[in-house]
Length: 433
Image (tube, rainbow, N blue to C red; front, top):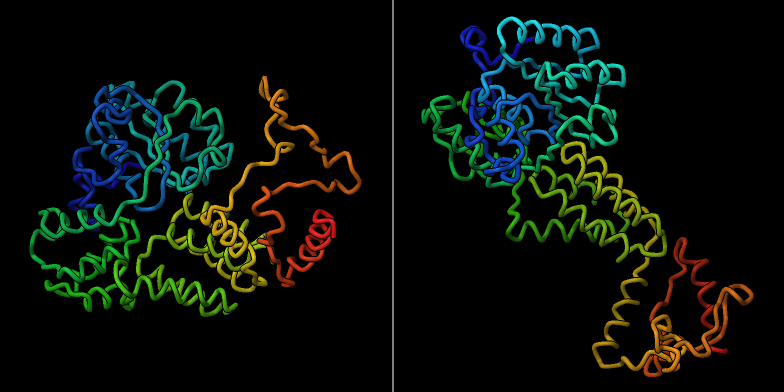
């Protein structure tokens, strides 16, 4: 079906603020500077007006649909939008057939925009191939998922992949300020209090479309938009949280201490507060990764795997879906057995190094692979552990200055209990006890 961006649709139905404020040129686009600068592939493709095939990959609300519309608008092409959620092969073929007829009869090209293209199955994606190969349309597919896993190789190999980044707070703030003053938006008819602006930025979580939807809802309640008006409009209590002030540090401190104290419910509460306040999910994920080694460590080594996977998932899909991955990691960390033996071990080792307890690497452990090393005696007397029973052999490994130092002192908690027993036997054997 043709886009709602034509004039007839505009006259028939008042469009949402997010639609009215869509940029009309590349220069009006806020954010995504790495894609829009002079000489970038996207700008060259638009300026050449040649048929093209693009995949736009990024979190929700970062401008995928906007860029597709701008390409259509700037190049004076028909804009046809298909949602992969509801469309089938028949719809795809019908859109392509119409585009071919339009191209043949009038010479006018068509932008075929497929939103959430990752939801198309193989047959539906195959239906796009002839149009892409023969350049009957300018195909643009939008996806929030990694296209290397969700898009068939023939289609991906014929397309330019552009990765969109989450909008910064400054980007979202600029979007809102423009919407308040621009004639296409509120046209200066409403005033937006500074506190309300910052609250909208937090609520948006890097999603420009969401920020404009909330602004529009607030503007319907009156021309003086305050924090209280925004709360009422979006039916969500404001989270009193300053990401640069005490609340930022107090909440993250309580979050970490709740996980350390094994209270998953309290930890989830603080996680929710940070998410609702618009805290950067990558910051939260980093703290969980640190916690997994600092407070759980060898008591449950899989905790670090879960934390790292959650951090990667947040980077890949963003919010709101990423909150589920964060919650899973928080629950794993909170309910896991605890041990700070890892952080104590590395802290003690670093402490000794800073005190000057370094010493020479024992000669039999030095690198013996380069020419002349043997003449220096490097590697002489080294015993290869794999040649001995149980892969263990008694020899000096540490420099003389720290020989006999005990850094890793495992607890008996969780999976670290068996590690402690094995390490005690190994240490005793190596030290000759």
